[in-house]
Length: 506
Image (cartoon, rainbow, N blue to C red; front, side, top):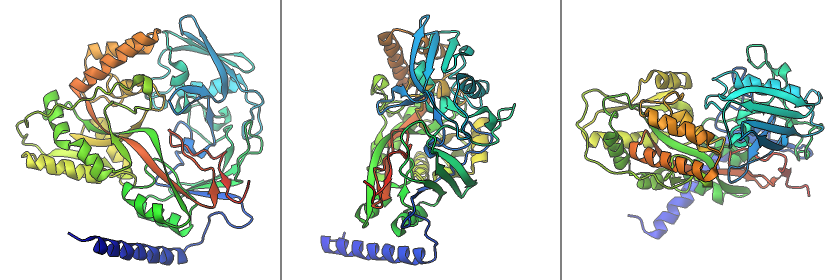
């Protein structure tokens, strides 16, 4: 044990070492942040924001290059975006969206209902772009006026404005994609347009003077891909970047240093992301719910979050983010049970390599491995590149996997359809026709109180069966230098680039 003076001395030494390392590192770099007389914002992120041709949007939503029909507020309720208002009829089977006026695409083409219709049908026609089945009940979509879209659904959908929010209805000019849906470019309506991008390196943007809303405060924005967390932190401290802004951009253990660093503003926001431990319920070990509850018990999530994600998360008592206040019931109760008989085969824990620089997933996997070993199980951790990770998930070549998920629509159907429904893309063998029926009933129930009761029942059943284990809800750190003002992340970890300003401007 060290006394107080020794601890303070060690901290001073550590701080000085970091300071010297930053100075040495910065000396060999060409600074690309905001320079005198230049209105440019450089943001460091831990992943590539160039999603590419075979994606929904070509660029990540955080780039502020594309917009959608609706967006979610801090309570995850739909608010106007490219749709200025909407109404429903025929028991929520028909939804009419009135579009904003005088909206231009980046090529200066006026936005019309016909162009928006083509963009949304691209999403609706492919399970790859609509993995949670937002449009599975769509009968037809009509441009019922120059700036009016009408969705005709086969069944009632009372939460439809939420369902089509953000990534479910990105609006890109049809010139951006070919007949097969592959993107050939990025022509959106957002306040920034694509200037240049290099995969794995950066995405460069310029302000779009024709944007229908308020003009941005910066002429240019650059998102730099800095996968290594230490490199990201040092880039901020050295002035190489002006901000670190994304979910997982700053690790919890880096917060103390950044908080005390001169000229850096450290902030936090609770985002709609939850971190999960996935069970392969088709395997011998996790076929029974008792074994899943046993593992959840030995994880000791409260202690784990305090030790590994201190200050950056709260233990999950719901299957998904409690920001969705209408649907957060706090029903998740882990019932510790006796250890099952150890299996002869090796327990395989897989981790996505791209998550390691953003969250303490390797530490969590190692903790899990140690707890399994103490119970007589042999376990191995495999860190896999994205392609191999998702292939292992798809083929069921795992026992346990760590994965984040964001409740992008703000309603439970998005989660239950994706993870729990027997035809969902992330269904791992724990479900039944009764659960499928409840999910379907909840999606179409018009009466709010009845819909809430069904989702509460699903939440209770989830706690009993535990098809996957929510670990913690993310409270993301982000930071910027004092050269930047009005810089904020929202609940979808989207930087509010229109509000951000150089600090020397009023």
